[in-house]
Length: 430
Image (cartoon, rainbow, N blue to C red; front, side, top):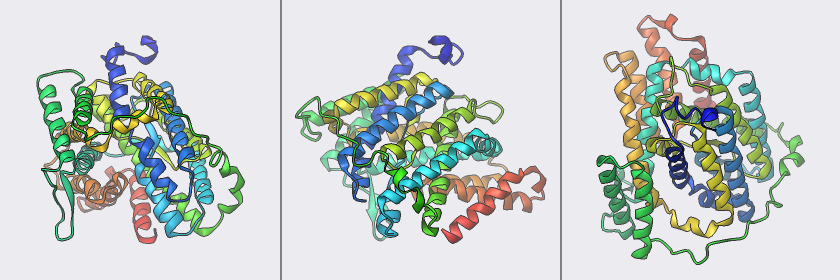
């Protein structure tokens, strides 16, 4: 097993990988609760959604761990589940069964693109500075998510965002967890992020801020209401609005996953010659999980940026993903315990991981304006638009224009020009 996962080559151990896997799972376990809540508003069965969410995470994380030896967790994407429910089903009036079929078709297209290494080629031609900008931008995005979950940053009609109520008990709990985690990391305690989550959960239960589970083991809900419905609506995918939906799923999922893989590879020091090792296998595993997820009955899956929490603990191989998969499998039977992992409990981990990832910006060549401006826009627009894909798209649009103005247009790969044009059309028409 050590040879298969290359523990020695990547400077890791089974203990580190196990702790990394558990840490990543705890950071993304909220998806088991949130995804069913969001998708159920589209008329889907919440119990079936819980099981479908867990199974898609189990198979997706296991696939990327075994196929690509990558320390990444895969589960239904938070941004795409909201798009599925509020934009497609509620906004456009498309039945959830048809929308789910669109997710299935998008996954099939992804698999084809991955098999022919088109997705890998696109990722590899992204300029080095933009890759660092993507990794750093995701750090700021994750930190913003953590600050929001903690209640430290809240919405404001006049200023859009402002500081939250620091006297709120749950916000105070998140603040306490942040300080404890910070102190452990500064003291050099390995697994400080994981221990921080555990300590924060215990303190939350002691003070009644986190519900103490009323049971330990729960029944696994049936997937009958959602399983396989995609095969019953394949004839509906040729509607113009459904084709537009499929394209949107393709666009957002592609660059959410690309951003996550770039961020994790950079953070783990796995990037070689501006290329991600085993990128093709990782992308194939990701697209395969999307197809399986649609069959199970959930919206598009993606590689989770929260995987960076496990990398920060020491995860460097696919064994981390195997542990993530095992944790999701266990969670199927211990669903009552998931109530302990609240957004306030995991918020400190996300903020600190964001800070660790933001270090990537130091690798950007800030002395060149043609690099500085596209990189800055990529970074800043991720948290401001609450979308990794949007930040990437805007950076990709600006970079070719900047290089043309610099009369260095020959140094830009034709794929980057193509992507820039596609993104412009995406924003204009969709």
